[in-house]
Image (cartoon, rainbow over all chains, first blue to last red; front, side, top):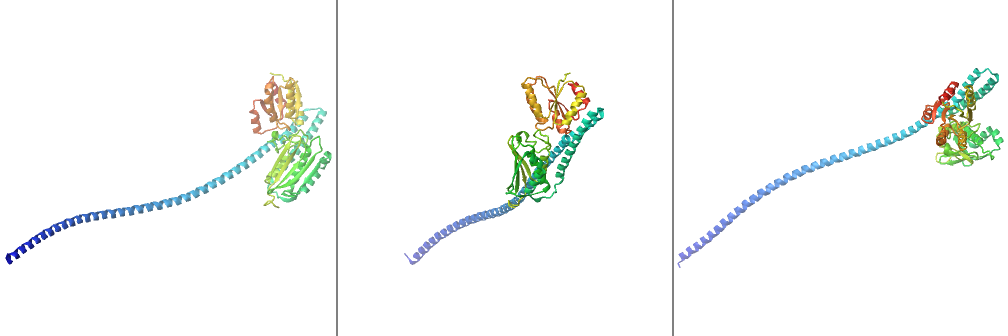
Amino acid sequence: MSAGNKKDSENDQRANELRIANKELAFQNSEKEKRASELLLANKELLYQNEEKEKRAAELILANKELQFQNEEKEKRAAELVLANIELAFQNEEKEKRAAELVLLNKELSRQKMQLEDFCNIISHNLRAPLVNISMLVDFITETDDAAEQEELREKLSIATNNLNEVFNELIESLQVKQDLEIKSEKTVLDDFLKKACNGLQGQISKSHAIIESDFSDAPFVVFPAQYLTSIFHNFISNSLKYQHPGRKPVIKVKAVKKGTSIVLSIEDNGLGIDLKKHKNNLFKIRKVFHAHPDAKGFGLFITKTQVEALGGKVWLESSVGEGSTFYVEFVNQYSNGKS
Amino acid sequence: MVKVKNLWLVDDDEIFVFLTKKTILKANFEGQVTVFNNGKEALDSLQELIGNNEVLPEVIFLDLSMPVMDGWGFLEEFIALKHKFKEPITIYIVSSSVSPHEIIRAKEMEDVLDFIIKPVSREKFIEIIQNL
């Protein structure tokens, strides 16, 4: 082979190679273009997805803001509810207070109603009865010409008039208690008042040979209106003397003991006793008497009860028929802390 | 018309009893008047008469305010005894009370024929006796 030929074949080979290489390049190029267009597509897709995500993110931000707002609103509402709840609790307390006040007022009204009924009874039974007698007696005296009969009627008229007078005075005394609500309490020595009451009842005490014992060692004083204390001792002692047991010498034990901030005075006797079951509702009522006794008028205990209750205290009684009675009087607010 | 032979007066007021007996006498009442000073005395007597199968009163004039046992207490016991009476007993409340509460309470009781506010005049007494 000639050099020229060799060179030609080399050139051909080279051209072939180049062609192949060119084809290869063209192929690669087309592949790259394909790839580029794919990437372009993928890129578009990504861009789209990105936009979607941004949109979604913006939506989420909005939703978040909305939730935050709602949350704030709820907190506000909760705070309002707390306030409203406090207000309701306050109103509830006020209503309970008011209800308690009404209960108290109601009690006071019932008490006053009872007092009014008491007074209606006083007027009916205690004032009207002697008045009726007096007017009847006057009629009878006018009607008759018989001197002896007139004299008898006149004697009765005098009794009836005295009776009316007595009832009237007792009534005035009990009415005064109700007006004397401003009466001043003072420190009073119990023993002095017991002695005073006993002196006033000396006649009855010596007649019945009554023994009166006292023990004021626990509580020698009470803070109470002296005037009422006199009447309390007098009424209880005379009550015990009046209803003494016919079979034994009266023994009356008077005692005062501390009880919290109160002092409880007790007057114990060994007299007839009262059937508490039967007379439960009538104790201390005006003119209620439980014994057929000539002096029984039933005013004393009523007055005592009124006097003690006017100052916030209490009066009660324990008794058994045939054995005796014990009357109790509680004087309230005697000590500020249980000590004098 | 029932002829009243036995009339009971249950009242603790001596003067009122004295005057009412006088009134009854002046009204020419021919029956017997028996006085009891309180509800307990009248009740005891009533029980005794029932026990001895003796004659019971036809009419009772009953006061309300009395010691030991008052008129209300007597009425309560009276009602419990009622089934033992052979003849009915008429009860008049005779009281000085003008309390509407008591008057209504008494009039509501079927055993109480009437509530007479004291005093009992001769005319009223005659009317009562004649109306039986």
